Image 1 (cartoon, rainbow, N blue to C red):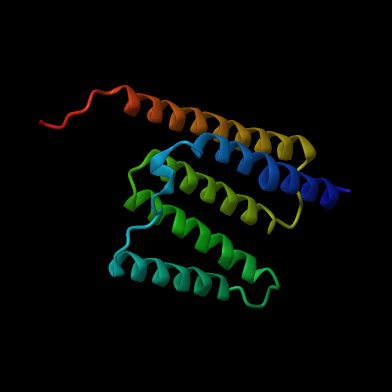
Image 2: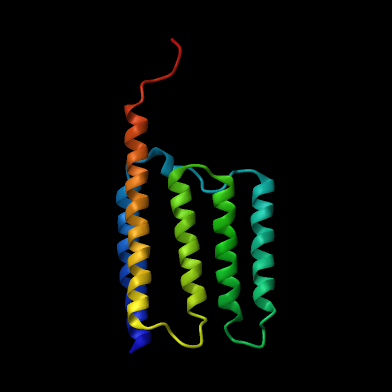
Amino acid sequence: MHVILAGLEVLLVRALLVPYLLHRALHKNRQARMSLMPSNLFAWGVAITLIILAFKFGDGARGDVRALTLGVAAATAMIAFLILATNHEPSAQLVAVLFMENALALFESLLPEPWPLPVHLAVSGVYILTVAVGSWLVREDVAASHDEPSRQVP
């Protein structure tokens, strides 16, 4: 029963509701069409290195069948940190925070005993609240940038 409820939570919250809310918030945001990662070879080299090291971290538990999930969780967290470190746009930082939240959800799936249902509901509530507040902040940032007078010299 717990697996069905967890799967339903992933499907409804993480696959349908949150992408819809993000799409609504970022639809008219010009900055949302920018790249999450800088387009230079050094940053991409760092990203590839972090992914390899994260999977090597998961490889240390190769006796366990969940080692691949541990590698994916570590790689997702490392890429989220890299995006947070290299991009200062609010929309990119919101996406990076959501990457981090998804990495935590993946790590939670490795626990030997599942969390009780109220804890799952609280985690989902925090996730939805994070998206709602982040979407509101991104929309406010877009509105503030439209209200500023142009600073170009004629």
